[in-house]
Length: 304
Image (tube, rainbow, N blue to C red; front, side):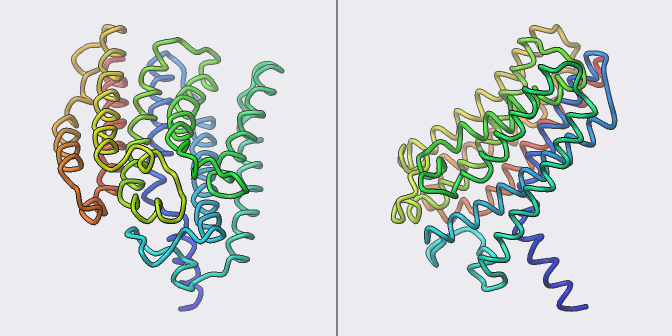
């Protein structure tokens, strides 16, 4: 029993539960927008949540596997030790975990498309996007030229956790997509990118040494902190513009309740020149991102 518990905990740690908040936030926001537009499908929402969570777990597994293969996870890493680093699992075990999660993602995604598609075009487009999401999750750190090592991770997060995550969830339930929906979708993606940026700022020195050229490495520590503040600022602006364009009641601005937390977080990150100080900021940023999306979604529900 003790060994079984240890094995379960090992896989849970490798799945990085805190990062799953970002996947959940994008689906909640997309669903709230669909409901605000007069459409809601519980089954599609559940399948979107399941598929997105599986894709995030796949990304986390692939990240650990790829960094291990390239020797990026050294003892100098400030963040939590990975399962392979601690000797709790082998690379082969993680590889099989990757394969299982790919299959689970394919099954969940295929079921989602089968339940929600209206036209052949929908079927082809979302099947293609699903395969692209799986490829993107794996090639972030795996392969000869992983895009995470070229500073393209932020764009991927903005796309998959924002525009596609929110916009896709909205479209699958409403079979339509309005331009203004891209505003909260972009905002959600920007907050998710801020979480990644905290991770990259924290590990900036070690990443630079091993040749992992994240956007933080390319920008430098100071500019990376400024970039972090801009991500948060433009996210708030995007939510606000959406609320103004759609003439929401005051409840549509509930997301502004998280503004003090965002400002406090931004100032702390901007002033933190020691990467060690950023270690607890990753979980904090994840929670603030989730809270902001929940408040925005609640505001939409009340406004309706």
